[in-house]
Image 1 (cartoon, one colour):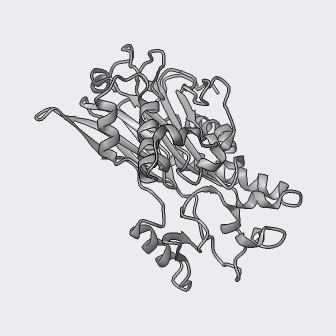
Image 2: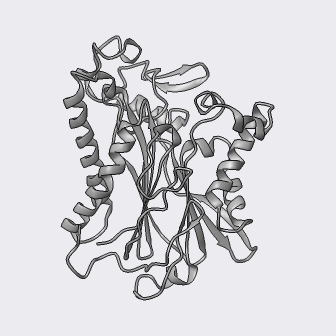
Length: 351
């Protein structure tokens, strides 16, 4: 079983995967049959997002080999194995490094096999499809992922239904909704201090400790998984962390990709978001770029983007034809041609 892995990481993680370019973006490794893309937006530190980068893809390969096909269940198992693995890391490091219990990461994954796209998400990163409407020539934005941020009313309602005895499960703090007044996302990998009560105590920093012990996990690692059949007029998919969507609407992002050359699409989206961030602060983009990265965190969130372009002719034939090539571009940089092929492998899987 082979995959395309393109794991782009936020600069705040200070982690550059082997093969990345000078800006810290990685186009990934190319294999046949499958395409994999992951966005891991860490918070509280880089440990969780690094762990996901090193382990989730391997778990996905292993479970796909065991099941001999890609499926929602395979993806769910890979997420859970990654979560369990990071729990083990926290357990080992707790005596020497207790603050690791307060480190976590959002996790957005896209897997394309044949003409089927699986999107799995924890947290508030987002996947958006650009689909051509032949009658008008427009390319419409279609959101593919569900988000888990307390700013969404449905998420607050879900938390309240899961914790009916806790009136403070979501708190409006400084005009921002937060789970227990601490964190905006309701689902993640890591953040063990809000999943296991034994890690919500000293010597963890007081700002992370709850006044009363909790009886059930507050945050979840259960991903929202959607399955989409790609159509011949589907043009591209934008995978990005919430830092992009804070400043651009889905349609604005799709228009920006559609109306410019493919090369450099991800960088162009990042620049557009930064320009909007500067405008909101009534400053010039050039001045924003001059600010030290550590200080710029007060002006905008980290922004991580992958743009995957689809070959319309091959999408329509992917389930029955093995030989045609498909052009896939990550981060606006060309990646060598590859196949789209049926989801079920026909030979033993190589790991």
